[in-house]
Length: 135
Image (cartoon, rainbow, N blue to C red; front, side):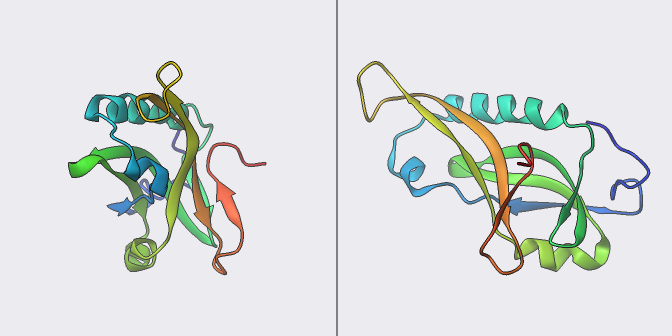
């Protein structure tokens, strides 16, 4: 992770954790905690390879730090935001994209999850922005 002079964390930012929307298909499958843990670890490696951690999320600066696995295999994101923006970011929609890899010819036994990106909607909710793959 690379912080620079524009990083929120280095400019009196506060750390918060926000919920990540998980696609319904993932909620309907039986996925072990170990598979989720591996998916989160692998995605955090991608996050750490970014040239800058600070994102402009609908006109507000935020340092996107890492995904975490909470109880019940829910995903949360650790981030740093300006003090006055805490409530705003608590209400923002964040989600993930990726692939489900099934065992053999099965359509219900999950072998792995590959989280490819973290996404969020613009203020109008009609355009999706990506954190890793900007285009």
